[in-house]
Image (cartoon, rainbow, N blue to C red; front, side, top):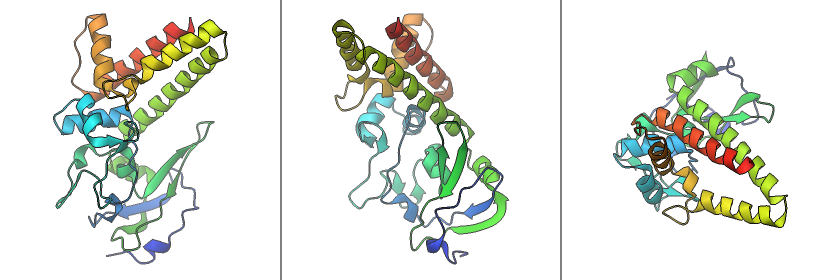
Length: 236
Protein backbone atom coordinates (compact mmCIF):
# COMPACT_ATOMS: atom_id res chain seq x y z
CA UNK A 1 0.00 0.00 0.00
CA UNK A 2 3.01 2.31 -0.15
CA UNK A 3 3.29 2.66 3.62
CA UNK A 4 6.89 1.59 4.16
CA UNK A 5 8.43 3.42 7.13
CA UNK A 6 5.33 5.62 7.59
CA UNK A 7 5.22 5.10 11.39
CA UNK A 8 8.84 6.28 11.72
CA UNK A 9 8.58 9.44 9.65
CA UNK A 10 10.15 12.55 11.15
CA UNK A 11 7.91 15.16 12.74
CA UNK A 12 10.83 17.60 13.00
CA UNK A 13 11.09 18.60 9.33
CA UNK A 14 9.80 22.05 8.41
CA UNK A 15 8.03 22.14 5.07
CA UNK A 16 7.31 25.21 2.97
CA UNK A 17 4.65 25.39 0.31
CA UNK A 18 7.20 24.58 -2.38
CA UNK A 19 8.63 21.59 -0.47
CA UNK A 20 8.40 18.17 -2.12
CA UNK A 21 5.52 16.22 -0.57
CA UNK A 22 2.66 13.94 -1.53
CA UNK A 23 0.20 11.81 0.38
CA UNK A 24 -2.48 9.40 -0.78
CA UNK A 25 -5.26 8.43 1.62
CA UNK A 26 -6.44 4.81 1.41
CA UNK A 27 -9.42 5.34 3.73
CA UNK A 28 -8.19 3.19 6.61
CA UNK A 29 -9.90 5.76 8.89
CA UNK A 30 -7.24 5.33 11.57
CA UNK A 31 -6.56 9.07 11.59
CA UNK A 32 -10.23 9.62 12.56
CA UNK A 33 -9.66 8.28 16.09
CA UNK A 34 -8.27 9.89 19.24
CA UNK A 35 -7.77 13.31 17.68
CA UNK A 36 -8.88 16.71 18.96
CA UNK A 37 -10.44 18.38 15.92
CA UNK A 38 -10.42 22.10 16.65
CA UNK A 39 -13.02 24.29 14.97
CA UNK A 40 -13.47 27.97 14.16
CA UNK A 41 -16.87 29.58 13.45
CA UNK A 42 -16.50 29.18 9.66
CA UNK A 43 -15.89 25.45 10.02
CA UNK A 44 -18.86 25.18 12.38
CA UNK A 45 -21.03 26.97 9.81
CA UNK A 46 -19.91 24.61 7.04
CA UNK A 47 -20.56 21.54 9.15
CA UNK A 48 -23.91 22.86 10.38
CA UNK A 49 -25.00 23.47 6.79
CA UNK A 50 -23.90 19.93 5.94
CA UNK A 51 -26.18 18.64 8.70
CA UNK A 52 -29.02 20.99 7.65
CA UNK A 53 -29.10 22.71 11.05
CA UNK A 54 -28.03 26.09 12.42
CA UNK A 55 -24.79 26.80 14.22
CA UNK A 56 -26.56 27.19 17.58
CA UNK A 57 -27.88 23.64 17.39
CA UNK A 58 -24.64 22.29 15.96
CA UNK A 59 -22.52 23.76 18.75
CA UNK A 60 -24.81 22.26 21.38
CA UNK A 61 -25.08 18.84 19.75
CA UNK A 62 -21.71 18.13 18.17
CA UNK A 63 -19.00 20.09 19.97
CA UNK A 64 -16.94 19.96 23.12
CA UNK A 65 -14.36 22.24 24.77
CA UNK A 66 -16.72 25.24 24.91
CA UNK A 67 -17.67 24.90 21.25
CA UNK A 68 -14.12 24.75 19.90
CA UNK A 69 -13.71 21.03 19.11
CA UNK A 70 -15.73 18.17 17.66
CA UNK A 71 -17.20 15.54 19.93
CA UNK A 72 -15.85 12.00 19.93
CA UNK A 73 -17.81 8.82 20.60
CA UNK A 74 -16.95 6.20 23.22
CA UNK A 75 -14.24 4.44 21.19
CA UNK A 76 -12.49 7.74 20.51
CA UNK A 77 -13.73 8.05 16.93
CA UNK A 78 -14.85 11.35 15.47
CA UNK A 79 -18.58 11.86 15.91
CA UNK A 80 -18.93 11.99 12.11
CA UNK A 81 -17.06 8.79 11.29
CA UNK A 82 -19.37 6.23 9.65
CA UNK A 83 -18.95 2.70 8.29
CA UNK A 84 -18.31 4.31 4.91
CA UNK A 85 -15.78 6.85 6.15
CA UNK A 86 -16.22 10.54 6.92
CA UNK A 87 -19.88 11.51 6.96
CA UNK A 88 -19.12 15.20 6.37
CA UNK A 89 -16.20 14.83 3.96
CA UNK A 90 -17.25 17.66 1.64
CA UNK A 91 -17.23 20.09 4.59
CA UNK A 92 -14.50 18.57 6.75
CA UNK A 93 -12.42 21.00 8.86
CA UNK A 94 -8.99 22.30 7.89
CA UNK A 95 -7.04 19.96 10.17
CA UNK A 96 -8.67 16.99 8.44
CA UNK A 97 -7.99 18.42 4.98
CA UNK A 98 -4.28 18.97 5.51
CA UNK A 99 -3.61 15.72 7.41
CA UNK A 100 -0.95 14.31 7.74
CA UNK A 101 0.44 17.84 7.83
CA UNK A 102 0.06 20.42 10.55
CA UNK A 103 0.11 24.13 9.73
CA UNK A 104 2.03 26.65 11.84
CA UNK A 105 2.14 30.45 11.64
CA UNK A 106 4.65 32.49 13.64
CA UNK A 107 3.88 35.82 15.31
CA UNK A 108 5.59 37.46 12.33
CA UNK A 109 3.24 35.70 9.92
CA UNK A 110 5.72 33.12 8.65
CA UNK A 111 3.94 29.92 7.59
CA UNK A 112 5.40 26.43 7.73
CA UNK A 113 4.18 22.85 7.91
CA UNK A 114 5.20 19.73 9.79
CA UNK A 115 4.20 16.08 9.61
CA UNK A 116 2.00 14.71 12.36
CA UNK A 117 2.97 11.37 13.86
CA UNK A 118 1.10 8.70 11.86
CA UNK A 119 -0.86 5.81 13.29
CA UNK A 120 1.41 2.73 13.54
CA UNK A 121 -0.90 0.87 11.15
CA UNK A 122 -1.67 3.70 8.76
CA UNK A 123 -2.37 2.74 5.16
CA UNK A 124 -1.71 6.23 3.85
CA UNK A 125 1.02 6.45 1.21
CA UNK A 126 3.67 9.15 1.59
CA UNK A 127 5.83 10.38 -1.26
CA UNK A 128 7.55 13.29 -2.98
CA UNK A 129 5.64 13.32 -6.26
CA UNK A 130 4.21 16.80 -5.67
CA UNK A 131 4.56 19.81 -3.40
CA UNK A 132 2.86 20.95 -0.23
CA UNK A 133 1.16 23.68 -2.27
CA UNK A 134 -0.29 21.13 -4.67
CA UNK A 135 -1.50 18.99 -1.79
CA UNK A 136 -3.22 21.97 -0.15
CA UNK A 137 -4.89 22.90 -3.43
CA UNK A 138 -6.11 19.35 -4.03
CA UNK A 139 -7.68 19.32 -0.55
CA UNK A 140 -9.57 22.58 -1.09
CA UNK A 141 -7.91 24.36 1.81
CA UNK A 142 -7.87 27.97 0.57
CA UNK A 143 -11.14 29.21 2.17
CA UNK A 144 -10.35 27.33 5.37
CA UNK A 145 -6.88 28.81 5.70
CA UNK A 146 -8.30 32.27 5.03
CA UNK A 147 -10.91 31.69 7.73
CA UNK A 148 -8.53 30.48 10.42
CA UNK A 149 -6.17 33.39 9.78
CA UNK A 150 -9.00 35.92 9.97
CA UNK A 151 -10.38 34.50 13.20
CA UNK A 152 -6.93 34.45 14.78
CA UNK A 153 -6.67 38.14 13.94
CA UNK A 154 -10.08 38.73 15.55
CA UNK A 155 -8.96 36.93 18.70
CA UNK A 156 -5.91 39.17 18.84
CA UNK A 157 -8.08 42.28 18.59
CA UNK A 158 -10.41 40.95 21.29
CA UNK A 159 -7.47 40.33 23.61
CA UNK A 160 -6.14 43.85 23.02
CA UNK A 161 -9.47 45.48 23.88
CA UNK A 162 -10.03 43.34 26.97
CA UNK A 163 -6.52 43.99 28.28
CA UNK A 164 -7.06 47.72 27.88
CA UNK A 165 -10.36 47.57 29.77
CA UNK A 166 -8.99 45.40 32.57
CA UNK A 167 -5.99 47.70 33.01
CA UNK A 168 -8.16 50.79 33.44
CA UNK A 169 -9.96 52.16 36.51
CA UNK A 170 -12.60 50.42 38.62
CA UNK A 171 -15.50 51.72 36.56
CA UNK A 172 -13.84 50.57 33.37
CA UNK A 173 -13.00 47.21 34.93
CA UNK A 174 -16.70 46.80 35.63
CA UNK A 175 -17.30 47.61 31.98
CA UNK A 176 -14.75 44.95 31.09
CA UNK A 177 -16.71 42.41 33.12
CA UNK A 178 -19.92 43.37 31.32
CA UNK A 179 -18.01 43.11 28.06
CA UNK A 180 -16.89 39.61 28.94
CA UNK A 181 -20.44 38.71 29.90
CA UNK A 182 -21.65 39.91 26.51
CA UNK A 183 -19.04 37.78 24.79
CA UNK A 184 -19.53 34.56 26.68
CA UNK A 185 -23.22 34.42 27.53
CA UNK A 186 -24.91 32.34 24.88
CA UNK A 187 -27.93 30.07 24.77
CA UNK A 188 -25.70 27.29 26.10
CA UNK A 189 -23.84 28.66 29.15
CA UNK A 190 -20.79 26.54 28.28
CA UNK A 191 -20.42 27.97 24.75
CA UNK A 192 -19.25 31.60 24.27
CA UNK A 193 -21.89 33.61 22.43
CA UNK A 194 -19.46 35.09 19.92
CA UNK A 195 -18.65 31.62 18.54
CA UNK A 196 -22.27 31.19 17.43
CA UNK A 197 -22.11 32.67 13.93
CA UNK A 198 -25.83 32.36 13.21
CA UNK A 199 -26.80 34.18 16.39
CA UNK A 200 -24.31 37.02 15.90
CA UNK A 201 -25.06 37.45 12.19
CA UNK A 202 -28.81 37.28 12.72
CA UNK A 203 -28.67 40.09 15.29
CA UNK A 204 -26.27 42.11 13.12
CA UNK A 205 -28.45 41.78 10.02
CA UNK A 206 -31.56 42.67 12.01
CA UNK A 207 -29.88 45.85 13.26
CA UNK A 208 -28.66 46.74 9.76
CA UNK A 209 -31.98 45.75 8.15
CA UNK A 210 -30.32 43.44 5.68
CA UNK A 211 -31.03 39.84 4.74
CA UNK A 212 -29.10 37.04 6.40
CA UNK A 213 -27.00 35.36 3.68
CA UNK A 214 -27.04 31.59 3.21
CA UNK A 215 -23.42 31.19 2.11
CA UNK A 216 -21.05 30.42 5.03
CA UNK A 217 -18.25 32.53 3.53
CA UNK A 218 -20.50 35.60 3.26
CA UNK A 219 -21.86 35.03 6.75
CA UNK A 220 -18.28 34.80 8.01
CA UNK A 221 -17.56 38.25 6.59
CA UNK A 222 -20.60 39.67 8.39
CA UNK A 223 -19.69 37.78 11.55
CA UNK A 224 -16.25 39.39 11.61
CA UNK A 225 -17.72 42.81 10.78
CA UNK A 226 -20.15 42.42 13.69
CA UNK A 227 -17.37 41.44 16.10
CA UNK A 228 -15.19 44.34 14.95
CA UNK A 229 -18.05 46.83 15.40
CA UNK A 230 -18.60 45.45 18.88
CA UNK A 231 -14.89 45.84 19.66
CA UNK A 232 -14.87 49.38 18.25
CA UNK A 233 -17.72 50.40 20.56
CA UNK A 234 -15.77 49.17 23.57
CA UNK A 235 -12.61 51.01 22.55
CA UNK A 236 -14.39 54.35 22.71
